[in-house]
Length: 335
Image (cartoon, rainbow, N blue to C red; front, side, top):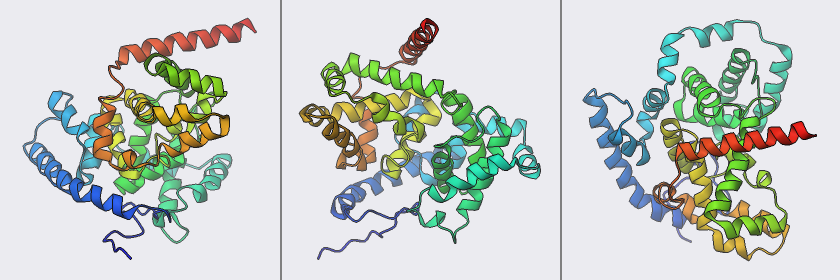
């Protein structure tokens, strides 16, 4: 039997599935570890020089090539604007945890805690992360009453906690994601989420028209395919290190990155999607395309998302959002 140097639990505490391909992963990591070492040296040099992390071509290139785990806390906070907001209200998180909690919110959050990463050793009943996650989610729910608590936030905050190991940093990064990068995704009406699923459908129609027509013919709604992709920001969907590489770019470049990931998954698997001849096989195909070797190799995957979809500007996405939101509003008015 072949042996492997990799544990059945990954570095973030997730138990690897029974069918995990250790040979494929070992082959990938043997090359990727050298990449990580090189990137860590470059980031250390950049940060030790005291250079600003204001947006420029160099920082953008560094972020796209990956932020080493040891620097993610600081870099995510700086490039996203979360650090500035934290400095404007340094005692906010502490004060939120000292105020009385609404019982309804407490009950809702506590219901989702055991459902959050049940296959992660840091989130089992004997570990502390459930308590930390409760604090982050309940503080955020009381800080933003319009959002309160929305399903999906537990996975985002949970993964942020695993990366940062810091409640307050997690709170501020969650706040930036929900209120700045993805506004209206997690409100009660989820208008932003609904619009972006429609935007994805339109982008697929423009860039991969045969796939769009095939999915339409099979009667599979794009909401069924992509809701979890958008709501969880690919957490619980793609391999953890791939998700974190996506989040590196998400905190720096904004939500456009999510569309690049979606389009890359669809374009790379175009042939398999087109071979599906019924609703169920198509639905299963979309589940499988997030698990193959292409998504495991996060370095190759991230290089691909900036090449495979072709040109994709913030202006194009904004225009589609405005157009589709207006059309949906007009349909609602007509009724």
